[in-house]
Image (cartoon, rainbow, N blue to C red; front, side, top):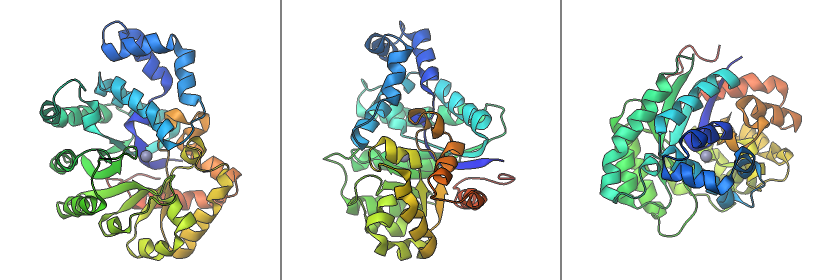
Amino acid sequence: MNFPDLHRHLGGATHPRILWGYIEKHGRETDVACRLRERFGGYDGFAREFSRPFADLADYLTVHHLVESLQAEDVPYFATRAVRGAAVFESIDYLEIRFNPYKRTPSGLPQLERIKLLPEITAQVIRAGRATGFPINTAYILCMDRGFPLLLNRAIMYLAHRMPEVVGVDLAGPYQDGGMTWEEWARLFAEAKSVGLKTTAHMAESDPDDVHPELFPHLDRIGHGIQIALNHPHHLPELAERRICLEVCPTTYLRTNTLQDLSELAPVFARCEDAGVPVSIATDNPALHGDSGRIVGQYEVLVRADVIHFNDILRYTQTGYEHAFGDVRGKGN
Ligand SMILES: [Zn+2]
């Protein structure tokens, strides 16, 4: 059977072997590859960085920064491999890939120069993802960042609006000081909806208090949102009313030390089902999650932990297709 995956970061979508292969090939030509080659010495050391235990979400995201800097050197190379791997090794027939285009521009350039490069970088990812020849539909989400100023996040949002293959925007990035206020985020998401974009936001992933109801009126989906069901279930009726779908990515919560055991997700699924909140099962960053990180593995670990029943699998894949932002025609059969 086939699967949709609505939540996958480009930065967490390429296997460490692919990244190291690039480093070996270009380790003497480019700064970042050269630095990584020196830092890790060989594949084993590099792969250990991906499979090591992470202290928390912030620690987990440090590997993202490492990958983003490498991917900035040749974005199409990594986008092609992310998409074809999902089609061939995971039976994914509908994939939404999200990425922050600004983080794929050369960090040494002034901000304005980097902003000018955003359309070309985004187009390169889309072209590369579409040219694999494998039977998979792809759609693209541009990530805005918690730490970016309004001007930059707005530039990303309007870029998403201008490119037909980009179906939505996301709010991502590590928690940090100096970012936008939640009022500003609510206004920006309202603006995104008003120009026809679909919207999702990372929220209530690890921190129980990272819940921002002022965004609910402007969201189609929430990235994770498990802490809403676990700690603030009084919000669930509103999510159901607004048909906001949660993108639940099980292995992430173990890797970020958010949960100690996946059975802790049982109340999330049960409460969402009772309240009528749609839930889709997704991967987030399979490259950091070992063998069970693939989409099939995400369903399997939930069945093994008695969080969902085997007979529910089709229903959850269907929810994924129903809440997709892009074209799923003919998919899921
Ligand atoms: Zn994510």
